[in-house]
Length: 86
Image 1 (cartoon, rainbow, N blue to C red):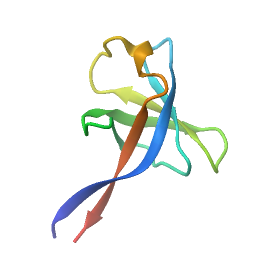
Image 2: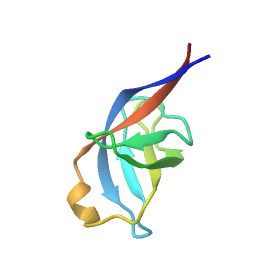
Image 3: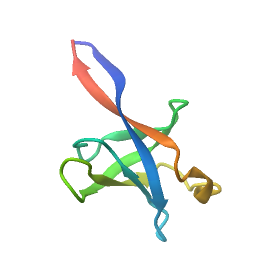
């Protein structure tokens, strides 16, 4: 089996928490532990918590590394990966 990864869901960064976590909103369900990427396909971190309305949930992302200038990220698009086995 081969694993291929495609970016599927586009969300937007809503805010950065005072603990340094990224809070983003997606148009539908996102699984916990999903990998989150920026528009350049750089890994930002993993989903650690999904909350809010089911149809447009918020997710908390634990960053892979300490964020540089985190407030400039608000409003930017983010993506999650979908794993498929072929």
